Image (spheres, rainbow, N blue to C red):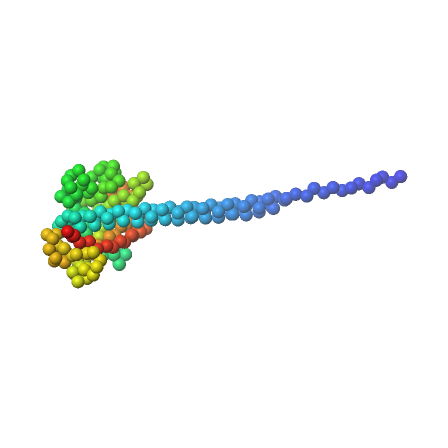
Length: 222
């Protein structure tokens, strides 16, 4: 009697080459996803920092407006500085804060300008003035994100405006600091450049600087 035929059972699976190929493709996919995530995270951080820089610039413009509108700061307060680097459309000569604002801010207790690194590190509202051998090379800095150690260099340009161009119903009376109509209104263009960080007590710019520019009109009102 013939023996029953034997049924052949083949085991199907992946070869070593197939496993290695799939692993390589999966690794490439994971690496690409990781790179996309890193890029997206960096872009989000940049946008958040940009928003904080805009907030800082707005706050600084308000502070300048109060000084120009309510005190004699516009006469002798700002310090003329020069030698700025950066894009060609930004002015090389700009104004910054003096080392002390006690005469305009209501006394030493409300002075927010400092030349002390320690004071600046402990005060989120301070303006840090770096004093150089030549006064025209001084620079002023403020915090954009103190928790992250991010600073910005702040400066501005003041351009006088004639009475004819600022009495057209926009609320600017062009009064002098003695209360006379002598055309003392000015256009303030504020430049806030970031990010900077303190390194050994000195502000150091990151590889790529961003700039926030704001403009307003200031003038002494009665």
